[in-house]
Every structure is written in structure tokens, then in C-alpha cells.
Length: 371
Image 1 (cartoon, one colour):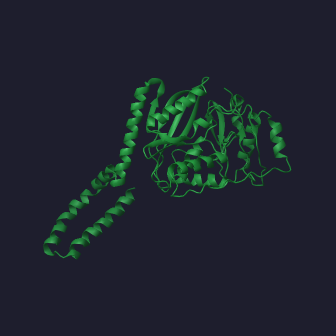
Image 2 (cartoon, rainbow, N blue to C red):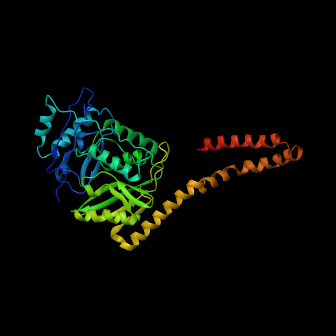
């Protein structure tokens, strides 16, 4: 199987201003034959770690970098990216020099944010979002432009999604999941959850993630990949296991063996929630489980997620209620005799309601302080 950049050609690039920021979109997508979420080229295994700065990630044993400097991109991150591109591109340094000294380069257009209306159906909503991601293109530069820390609160990741829209740069699979969550927040009838895959090919391990979606009793997905059948899936699968096995079938076409599948929990629709995404609530090791056993585990997980959503829509979480009740019970026991004395002496509504209101206010403040 051919690695992604072995026959790729860059469609456009951009020059740097004095701040090191791309005047357009840095380095546009390189298209060509691509492996199933494989890393750019075997030669990238020897990328020097002395380039400094930035976080290094591995995909199939091949290094790729993460821009941790934010925007505008600093000069060190910019130079590191160009050095890496020169190593993995077929034309090498000649291509880099040709682009960097060019007197004129066409400015790639900034992609317009999709116009998502509440009146649109779920299928149309997903189609518009996926088409928008495709216009951004998949990032083949070897440098991920947006840092995604999985332990970061959802509210912070939504700010990163807004930055993706502003910068309009190519994205990788993990960035696409965050962007997909942001763009589907307005569709409250649809539930979103992450699905991660670990596969093996030719002795190397590869990682990929997509955004699973559930609406009106059907499952589908959003995402980005070098391969068209390893990202979005139509909202047409009756069960979660059918969706996962469809991805496994797609991986087999590229001679990849699925080793592990990780399925998270539903992501809240409130973009201001200060809690991280649950990325791997259910972990299934495909090589150690029978097909039917995997199916049962996935369907049990799907039922549990649906039940939790139904419960949360009608009442508060039982766990939170128990915690709150336990912490407030001593105060309530101390106040109860006094409350009975007031009722016995004066049965007027004003006298009865005054003290409980004060206690409630004090208890709420104490609870917030503990958090």
C-alpha cells in the first residue's frame, strides 16, 4: 500500500509575513494516493528531533508535529514545518524553495461557514457539515495546525473549533471531530460520540478517530481521512455495531487489521460545559473477542447511552442528587426543630417560607464553594 505523500502534489502554498503567519492558509492540501490513515512517508521516520518546539505525535511509527504556538504561527514552528515538508515531499527542498521565493502565489479562498438552519433535516445538516470539512481539505503537511488536548474541557475545545473556522486551514481527523461537535451543537435531536480505531498494517500501528452520530434511531458518522470510506458514513445504520463493522470492512480493503475500537459517551450540546469529552468509555480488543461478543458489548453500550439521555431529560442525575443531599443533610437536621417551632407559633405563609429560603441560599453558596 502506497504511503500518502509518495505521489502527492501540493496545490498551493503561501508566503510568510514578518510575524511568521501565512498570508493565506500556509500550505494547502497535497493530493495523491493515500494509505488508510497512514503517515506520510517512511523517510519521515528519520525526521530530526532537534528541530525543537512543538509536540511530536506518531502515526504508524512516523513522526508528525503539532503547532503549539497558536496563531499567528511563530517562526520556529513555521521553519520546522517547511523542513519536514522538504523531507517527505517527492520533490524535496526544490519544491520548498520554489514556493518560498515565488514572487506571486494565488491566495486560496477562505471557506464560508455553512448556513445551518433549524428547519433543515438531520441528513441535510450532516451533509452540509461534511462538505464544509472537505472544502477545508485533509492536512498532509506533517504539522497539525491546531493543538487538541483530549483532557481539555469541552468549552475550551469549542474555542479551538471557532479558531479552525477563522483560520480555514486543512485539518486532520482529530480536529475534524472537534469541528463536527461544534457545528452540530445546534441540532439537539442528534447525539454525538467519538469512535477511535487502532489498526495494524505491515508491522505498524495506526490511529484514527471519527465522530459517531445518532438520530431518529439511526447511526452514522462525520470525520476526515485520506480515504473517502473511512470518514463520513450515512445516517442509515440501525445499530451501533453495524456502523462499527462497516468501518472494519472498509479497513480490510486497505489490508488493515482492526486491533482495538474505543467508543466514548454522548457529548453535551452546551458549548460552555466545563468537563472533558469521554473518549474511551468502552474499549474492545478485536483480536481477543469473537464477532458476536463484540456486537453484544456495543449494543449494551448503545442502550446504556440512550437510557442515560432519557433519564437526564426528565430529571437530574441521581448521583448528583445523592451527593447534594448528603452534604446538606446535617444542616437540614439542625434547622428542622426550629422550623417546626415557627410553624407551631405562627402559621402565616410569610413566617413559614422565610427561613427555608435563607437556608437554601446559604446551602447553595456552600455547595458552590466546595466545587
